[in-house]
Length: 146
Image (cartoon, rainbow, N blue to C red; front, side, top):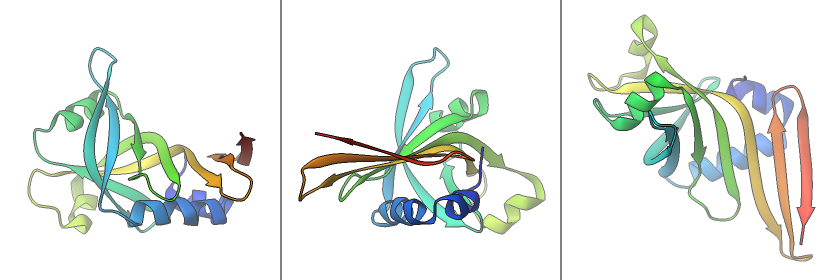
């Protein structure tokens, strides 16, 4: 797993384009796993703080219960001008470190330890679907499809 900072170091161009997609809109879609293993999708906001991609949850929200049980999740940026997704493990910020986030009492703050990032776009000139895929330590792979 990797921090956002590591992603930027290993794949600066792709990281910049994925970040731009997340910063273009306020709300995105967070996917978590329910106790029975089925998916749950929830609206979520993200923020880039220091070396990390951060997100939160209101007290008592089902997504917080899901993440405490199983931290695996994915976040899909509001789709427009490229389809950006990141996956990994949500690590809850607790204890003295939480004071740096100035969240209201009871709010859950998470950083995402990345396992992958994907950007899908269409090359208008060739009408090719372009999928750029990054995993920590493995660089960027590109797939093109009609």
